[in-house]
Image 1 (cartoon, rainbow, N blue to C red):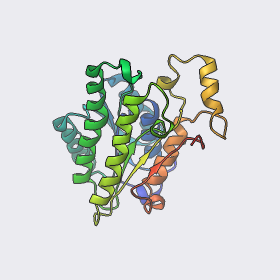
Image 2: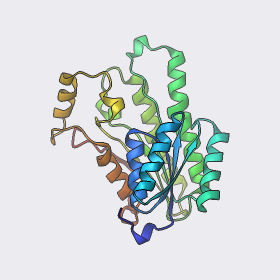
Image 3: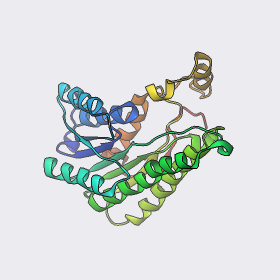
Image 4: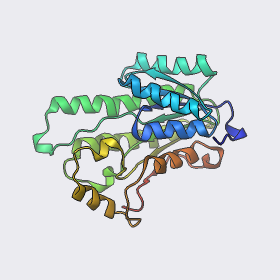
Length: 249
């Protein structure tokens, strides 16, 4: 494990940190020297395993459950980070849900559930981050390159991530004078279990061939971007959406 002295004793809170991209981000930040709070919604075993992996590599982490759209539970999540580690320096909001359907067929009850997590959840987490991040801190929201790619079937999901990007840009400007950066990272097709589930080899190969780099992204690719943004080296980047997709758009 590599520990950098400029991030010693700094604290990161990662929502959606039990699996996929969020888990890789949590592990990378722990390797960078952060104490990490691994936020999860329901899979306690996966979150516990993420913590064990971090600890086995010499890092510090705890797991905590919270519904990101519930302001009381999210406030308690930040309270836990502060009481356990002394404060919060970085928040990475990776929690979200995906629903694919043509607009014409979408059940509006499912739309409401998606937006509760992806829009209200982002607002609730960002609100607490804005109140609690220490000077020099960073907030990173996870968006998606599908906002620009406009794939059929992604209307509801892309709209929710468009809202995430809009909130990111506004909040970066509202935090003027706080020495806190606010950015979004928008992955393209990334080889996670969630992404690969239900896709045949032909579909995966077609998506992998789209970027000029001719491969799918990996969770490590996205974690590397986040690691840079929340480091002192990335602190001059603020109010931006970084499309981490190998050049697909």
